[in-house]
Length: 448
Image (cartoon, rainbow, N blue to C red; front, side):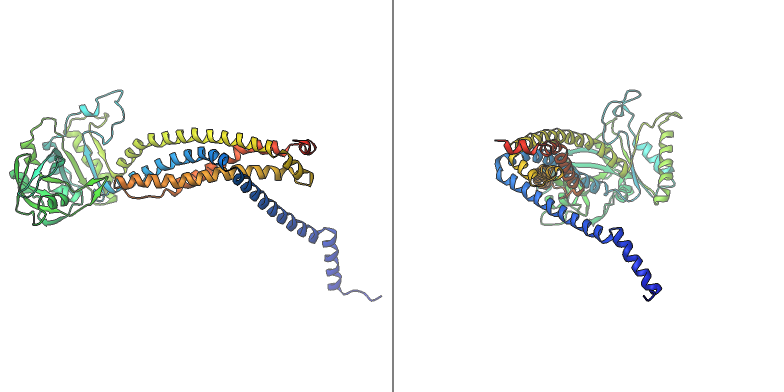
């Protein structure tokens, strides 16, 4: 007998090790198990769809609860997301690195437990605003403004509804609010110093009052008081179902003279040089105003410093209650729908007891019986969830269109809704599936 070469001997040893360790046999067995599992899952899925289709009315009433729960939260979140985008657009009208100082916050949620209430604070006077403007060295631009009245505007051609706002400003507001002049000129320091009876019109107001000619140089009356038009602003478009450009601007001194009110409080709009100097500018203006208003050291400010970020945070606080309410209502609806699904699945288990017994008798495992019924519950939930998501997004965007806000698709909440539906199906379908899997095959075959 000839001796084996070393390479041949090594390959022979590898072959015997593979055979002894059942390597190829194990690989084929794993592939066979995966293939069988895939086929069983597919068959369970088809059987679940068949069961749902054979009881259309029952299935429809069952998924209705899921549909309502998902719809309620998606429609609210879609509408709120549209409002958020609208609010961001409104706030973007402020120039870059700009903040506003007002006597009261933009939103007041509750009365403070200690100290003065915001609406009882002393007003920020025009004189204080001028002193801050003279001493704020870090500010690139600083403007003062105050809304004085709303009323009817008349020209020699047309008359408006009594909803036109009259705002008094200083020239720095044009920079702070990123207002550009389309025709004519902006208000100037000389207009403010002399309290001139001149005004700048918003684009839509100018078009309404002078549909066939230029507004510059014309005369208008606001609640019977006359002004000469010196400029027209570029259009900002529609927002929240109304015109952003439906207002007129006058020198703030003119407004103070014509609408004398000791409680009038001006707003201070400040623009910093850039992001690196923004915080320093805020601190400087805040310190100047605290000194002018005699705020004792260690006490809170008796005014509010507001930026785009702070206003968005306040807006989110306002809408948080709506989000929480929608989530609670939807949770109650989904729990009720889940209980309904559990009841329907228990009825289905009872009706199909003999079918379960036959499947168990021919070799179906408990796991596959459980999978079948859980899949059926999940499919019911997902059908209701998908319909609820589609209707919710459509309903929310219909509201957005009615209020002239941007159309949005909240993909995150759409995903959350479908994931929650899946969890509801798994949780509330688990007990009926467990009960079905543990039916005794012999008793099941005898069941009538």
